[in-house]
Image 1 (cartoon, rainbow, N blue to C red):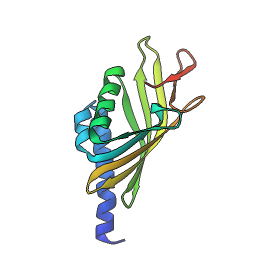
Image 2 (image 1 turned 60 degrees about the horizontal axis):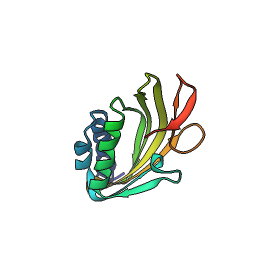
Image 3 (image 1 turned 180 degrees about the vertical axis):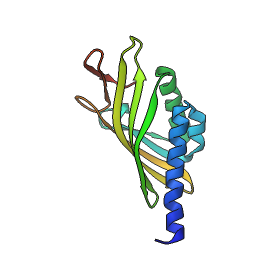
Length: 146
């Protein structure tokens, strides 16, 4: 593998790790600094088919809302690996509901990094009974993440 190709893979992984660390700090602006102006953010929780947000401002705004709605949300990394400008992140997301029960999701994000910035995020959620569902063991029910 050429040094240039190895650097591209390492750059993509670094951007994704920094993005995840900013998520866990609830730092939407910090996450936005890692996004390209013309980024595409497709999140399964935004609709059953996965809705797309376009642009840094829209994506940062959605992240700000997520952190306001879920002040305890955190993302645990299960695995991260890269191939060229692509990076895959397997994760567990957890939060505490208003009633004190625990919510959790598992999923995979596929990133495309261009010029050191995240250009594309394709998010897939593994849940109970459909896209974008989370599980709260306290009440044994599925519910929308947002």
